[in-house]
Length: 528
Image 1 (tube, rainbow, N blue to C red):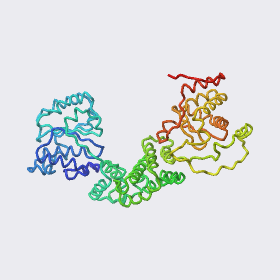
Image 2 (image 1 turned 30 degrees about the vertical axis):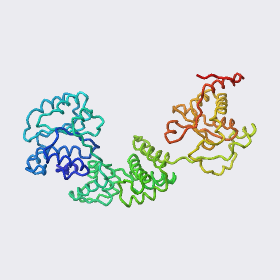
Image 3 (image 1 turned 60 degrees about the vertical axis):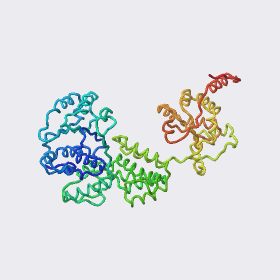
Image 4 (image 1 turned 120 degrees about the vertical axis):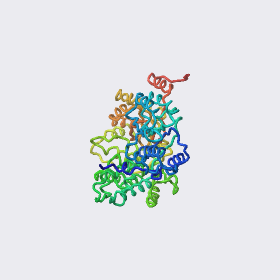
């Protein structure tokens, strides 16, 4: 019966394990010096060798080789029995399926029996963080003082869920993700053993898709194998794995840095039409942009898991953008990679991530604060929205600087209080609810002729957006020249690094509003 590649070629000796030298060296020295501990805790991501090393440790402590430094030799009958799965003194427990206290009590009752064939009984508890609190408590005493013939190896992918009382009774080893080059080396060896025909570039693609997990990478390669004589091409690998080409990833990144939306959307649609998975595309973008960010920050000394040629290409590309642009893009694509794709628009999170990574160009209007205010008749004609009149758009101006987004502009007075109150009053005259919706917002900044209003609740923002035409007309009348309102969610706006220049209403503001309605003047106010 055929076996999966990762099971068929599982390391049989310590020297066959790759990427975890800090663990294998310590375990080998412990076996050679006959100082193997009674309990170990192996922590790390999936597919990095935790269970494999636990089985190797079980082989080593029971191996019959006369030289402890050569254990396990993978030749004695004990080693062969463990390889074939018929060694009675190796007990593997899946904590995800045996989470209850009764399962641990059963283990505790049987642990005192002597080994059947080997020198030690080795208990491997996989995904130990899945045990219940009562099960952990039942395991404590046994784990602290097990019988002389018992050894424990606990494995987990979520170390933070293991109680400190358990950790303190174990020797803890942390496993790391493997680099792309380490995985490619292992896959190359495996391809030679299996006599597979693989086109250049396939193994690199598989290793990158495995994201540091050797088992995942070996499983993906196994998925690509049709028949031993069939050539595995890059195109087939991309189709099966749902990955986009490296050229597509680089081109889309360049489109972000060049602020070229049309070119970027074209790249996305071409990649998806050839079978790329949107979420996998987003993950690839996060990886590539992260490398660009590291290169932008640390220069040539950046620790990138890429070839020298790829690093040179990235060095040219990274000069086109700022560190802020890269950070924002990484946030957007990381969010898209974590978002479950909807059934009818699976590409939408990817497209939004791309578009949100490119800052919207700000439009600057030429009139200044010193321009004379138009007459009421002029305002009426300007706000009547003539359908057949064609106006010449103003010449494009450079966008406002990032350092002072609201330092000037005709709508800046709104943030100062008096004009804002007049704006609210006129809005209330037109629509009673309109004033309430505006009161629920906070003026955050001014971009050209656009006033940015921040909301805490999405449904209130949508209510005001539905009356955008009326709000823009009132705003134009109040400040005496064309202006408009843009509604945003305050949390999202501030999270992007914007600084609010909003107006905070005080008790004096409320009293002045009341005095204005009654025709009075506030002479003095004692605030608490």
